Length: 162
Image 1 (spheres, helix red, strand yellow):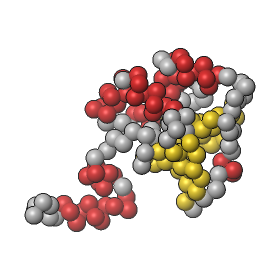
Image 2 (image 1 turned 180 degrees about the vertical axis):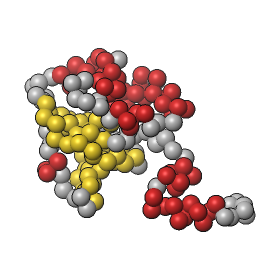
Image 3 (image 1 turned 135 degrees about the horizontal axis):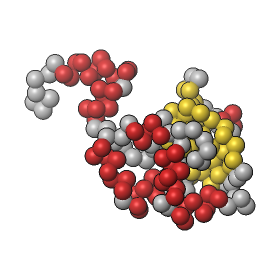
Image 4 (image 1 turned 45 degrees about the vertical axis):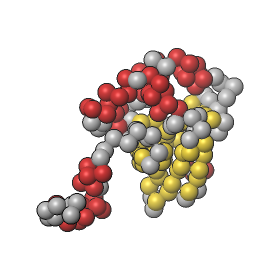
């Protein structure tokens, strides 16, 4: 993974989770992995990124990006595909017009590079870390283009709780 540009953070993470790295090195098994780009980690707010120092949480999050037993190219995903990740949690792949997204725990990441062939599977690169909601409701509304009119409307309300 370290040989692929923009995936150094995930390569480093796998180095600190040796059991998972060994599983992913096993050439007798196949995987499809949605790997967050280095930029996806850079975008994490500091207070949320610090939580990734918990090795149990970190391993769970990384395992939620992996489909075991299949090596799937982008063309093989339908408009709506549901899989079980290595954690057992659902991992969805959605097509919306010309874009493809992976979704886990209500966190959606866009595929920015696809179909990277590996000796035991296929890797797709995401612009977001899945399984780890890191924005508040207000921050999500503020940062989502099609929600900006709603953001502007609620900013003009004096007291949202009345």
